[in-house]
Length: 377
Picture 1: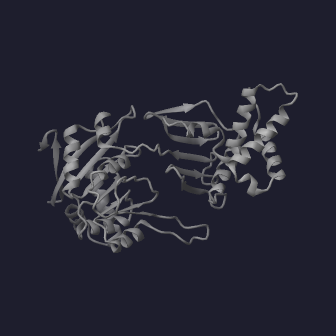
Picture 2 (picture 1 turned 45 degrees about the vertical axis):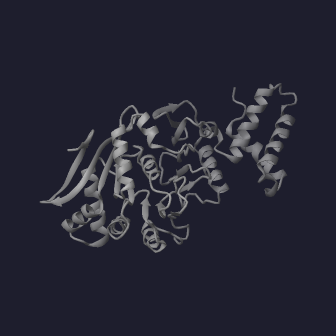
Picture 3 (picture 1 turned 90 degrees about the vertical axis):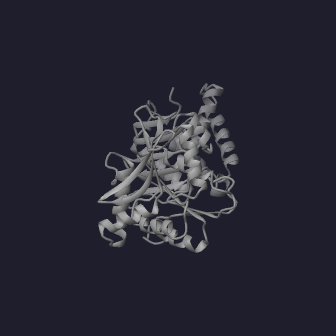
């Protein structure tokens, strides 16, 4: 049974908004009671059951304060990603498995309204002239939205949830992401201050691995983390500084780039610098930091293999610095000690595919020594 269609829902919300001031409605507890009272009033003579009344209250409350029909999925701890391709095409990732849901929004207008209302409550602007926006929620989840005309098939919404579960290397061993021997190797690499780079595809577990590795950093070391959107959770690191990049505002001002933050971090006397992900000219500053007094630093990037990732880093570095290709590759080889490559297979399982020492760059090739189970080759 459909309790309210989109137009009825909006009429319901408009009545509440026009009858109460913004300060009153900003209190979620007060707002919920207002909705309950209005639902009870409307239910007189409609023969709605108590369960139906409760469902209607949840529907209106979620529409005004949360993600509307998506809110129950957002609150499900087993769901790690929500992907809305169109108003009538919604996917979720649960336990590493992607599945399409029967659920849908009533129309493009409905989905657009949910997106603009949700971002608006966080004082974020998204509209036709500025159709791309992202934000981080208080619980660490990341939200990204795209509206027409940038999305010709209709509004797009993607939510990568932060579950609140801090990754531990023991848990990654238990779920088969890597072996016990590999975990011991990586622990030794972190404690002995080897510079580590983690590569892999989208959703392959790079940030999870970076978090797990960071847990081995001694608590007396000063660590600076640098990210596009803060996801790293370095529990127990008492001397920790977190920096987060920011995109330009609607007036094209106020941008803070990863490059700006890496350069600034060098003035904060870090023992180690951890860059969440590099994908451009900030690579030059990160590689320089690894070379100049910050051993044990770590970062991640998108790549299909360790070698391909090294080539991409070299390209980023060459583009940012105007260094020759060969010089860029030698610089990368001198900065990174260990490469860790992750892969997510068709079943959704994430695993370490390769761990290699980066020995040198010679005769036009990176010289890598792979870890073979119990030792390096």
